[in-house]
Image 1 (cartoon, rainbow, N blue to C red):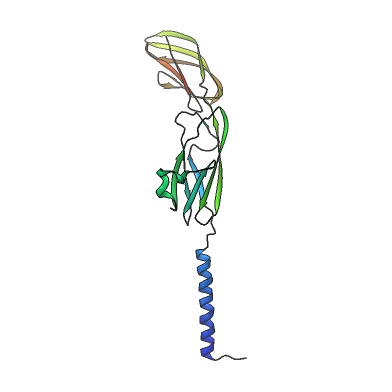
Image 2 (tube, rainbow, N blue to C red):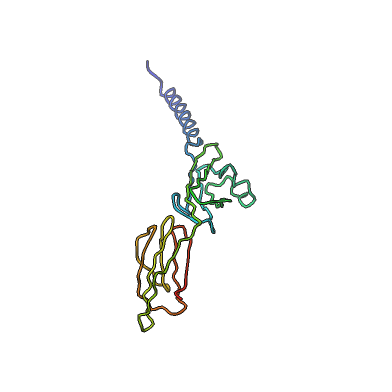
Length: 204
C-alpha cells in the first residue's frame, strides 16, 4: 500500500502531537519523593539537653506541603505559614521532656502531590556530667605545678584542660593524667564529656 505525500504529512503531524501530549504528561507528573535531612546534630551522636535544637531542611521539585515531626506538622505553626508549597524549607524544633538514653524522632515530609519521605533521627541523650578527681597537685617552683588526677564519664571523656592548657588523648570512659603547667592560684581543671557536659575544679 502506498500513501500520498499529503496523507503522510498528516499522519506524521498527528504522531508528533500525540508524542508531545505524552511528554507533557510525563513532565507534569511528580515522580520524585521529597528529600529530608538533618544538619545538626547528626544522627547517632551524643548530646545533652541543654540548648538542644534540631535543625534540618526539606526540598521537593514540586513543593513541600507538610513536615510532620512525631505527628505534629511544623508547617501548621504561624512561623512556617509562608513556607508551605516552597521547594526548599529550612526547619528547626526541640524535643520536650528528654531523659538520658536513646531517643528517635520520626520526621515525615510530604510534597504537594502526596508523595512522602520518612527520616528516623536518633540521638543518645546524656545529661550526666563527668567526674573529676585530683589525686595530687605538687609545686615545682617558678610558679609551675604538676597536676595529677583522673576523669571519668559514663559515655566518654572528650576533653581535659588545665588552666586552659588542653591535654591530648583519645576519648575514653576514664583518663588518668599528669601535666606540668605554669598555673596560678586561680587555675582550674575543666573536664568535658562527648555530650558537652562539663565539670571543673580549682587547684587549691
